[in-house]
Amino acid sequence: MSPLFFVDDILHRTDPFLKKEWYAIKAPTFFSQNKAGYTLATKTQGLRTSRESLMGRVFTLNIGDLSTTKTDDFRKISLKTDDVQGTQCLTSFAGMEITTDKLRGLIRKKQTLVEAFADVKVRVLLN
Image 1 (cartoon, rainbow, N blue to C red):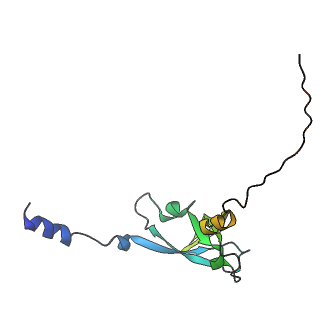
Image 2: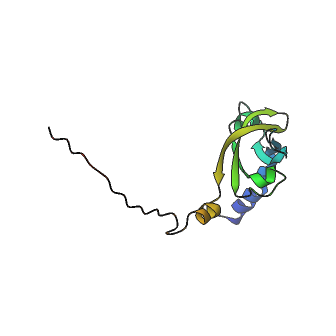
Image 3: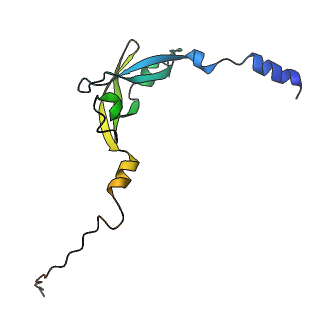
């Protein structure tokens, strides 16, 4: 390969972010913070619209980012895009998880084991 090939390749490259648009993520109204963040989507080209690529997209956020109290920082909220209006993604609640560090803190070795002894009467039925 000649060095001229590499120079042509470098000159004809374009920045992939020039083909992207920023969209604001709006959380449902029951959260105290409406703005959840921003996301990227490829601009509309031909038959592929940017709206189609955003519909159904799931965002995972910390609940501390969406509320004013910081007591539930160990919960992760999933928001799913339902509609796109202009440059805003309107979302709905899609699920909740607990962070792995909190989950491991709740379950400790030999602390969740319950040992019990009970006398049980068994009636055997023979045919």
